Amino acid sequence: MGIIDGSEVNSRGTVFAIKGRTYNFTLSYLLALPLFLAVGLCFFLPYGGAFAKAVEGGLTGGITVLQNRALWNITSFTLRQAFFSVLLSLAIGLPGAWYLSKRGRLAPVLRTLSAVPFAMPSILVVLGFVLFYGNSGWLNQGLGSFGGPVLRILYRPEAIILAHGFFNFPLVIRLAGDGLDRARRAYSPAAAVLGASPIVTALTVTLPLAIPAIMSAVLLVFLYSFTSFAVVLVLGGGPASTTLAVEIYRHGRIFLNYANAGTLAFAETIIAVIFFLSYVFFNRKAREIKTGTEERILEVKRSRGSIIFMIVYFFLVAIFVLGPILSIILESFLYQPSRAAQRIFSTIWWRSLGEGALPALFRSLFLAFFAASASCILATLASASIKLIEMRQGEKVLIINLIRFMAAAPLVSSGIVLGLGWIVIYGRNVSPVAVVLLHAVSALPFTFNFISEGFRSLPGNTLNAAMVLGAPPLRTMLGIALPLSLKQLRSAWGFAAALSLGELNAVMMLGIRNFETLPLYIFRATGAYRFGAACAAGAMLILGFIILFLLSEGGRRKYVS
Image (tube, rainbow, N blue to C red; front, side, top):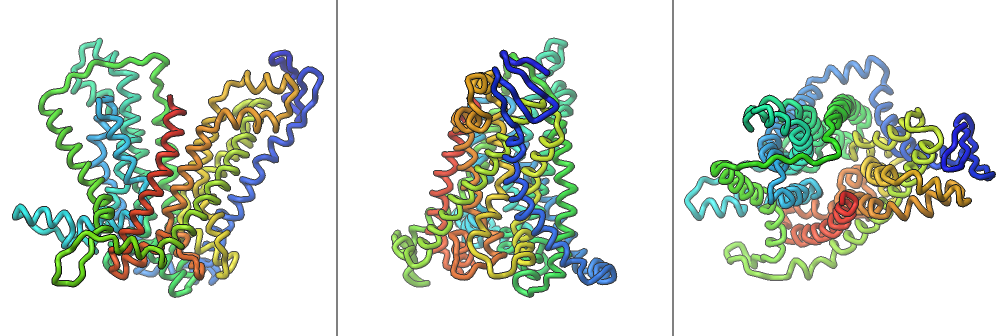
């Protein structure tokens, strides 16, 4: 028994007594049930179905498939391109991470600018790269006007690595930058007092302490590059540059060979889980650095050389980030009447959107709205469950760790593997509801993180006071905790909607008849070399993304402040 503000707590049972009122806290466990059902039916069961196809031929058949040299070549290339993508992301991101840790005047600008590529859908990355880095793209046109060389990088492994570097270097800036910032604030003042120079402090104190944060960024970049699909499918350039994700799609969707697709899915998942668990380990290590309650900021004197370097860096990053995006918007207003004619400003591509792009946009908005709403509902119920259990039994309870595991498990999911497993388990005749569920579950790690952090930040006395005044647990969570966490809920909803709006993998794998989303429309238009129509649709997708991104970031900034 314990006393909390005149309240009596029975920590062994499921009854919570406050001023003579008795509450049954079995509800706190039931609130997590929808999360368990959704993740079990839409994540673990499809994955199990995909893996079952890999071994349904028996042990001999599985060994035969694993002895296939082509499988090992595909796996080898997938690992190699992910490795070199990590190196490029580090080369681009580490200078920005170091500047971010110094909290320079332009640090907020760099943080916002670096968030743009990671938030972009993969199909927009592909389209922007074709337009900007193509043989006749804007970059080569600019280099040609100054007599520079023509860069030929598309449809080969170099294009995949460059696109992955563009897509993932923000992770290095943010994760490594935050780790460097924590290490610098925690120990750099003491090192300076002891007489260490800034260079010695950086090499012997800051960088070693930030290694776990840098490693967590490396492993997450590797994970995203390893499971990439659309970038490789369009920019790869042939069988020699294919990856496990692309081959899963080819065998499962085109060849209808579920056994081979399941084997490839199994190989991809095992490797992804290993790197994900390594990421969890290093991410936990990175958070062990405590900076204390007081801000200890050293006065940083920047040399002229470092200032010039950062100016050049900001300029190159701005071109690297904004070039492909602005190319999409610019190309949507250019029209070439004939091959011999010059391109002119025109709105013809925008006027033709009603034929296919607008219906595709409405379908994408439909998916984004319902997927984000479903994901936030599941995350809110699970977060409320954890909060109620913590109030009754404390933080170190097995069920809390289990709920967090179920919410985080879809982080290692691949839309291609989920789509394959859905077909195996539930059949090929699927409805848009299946896409909504898959998108909702895939966004759960992010929505749960946002909303649970909001609930965790609530003062316990506020909720206890509500119960003292007679409010039952469910009403306390819905009537007090949830309204106080609306900013985090808005941020979670915006982020989940943005993820769903640009998702292509599950839609392509499921192949729902007469249900073309906007990313799928852009993919097909790009494959047919209808770049004008693809750019107009891409500009619409960028606009939708900006709105959702601002919605998410606005809630996050208010939460941080």
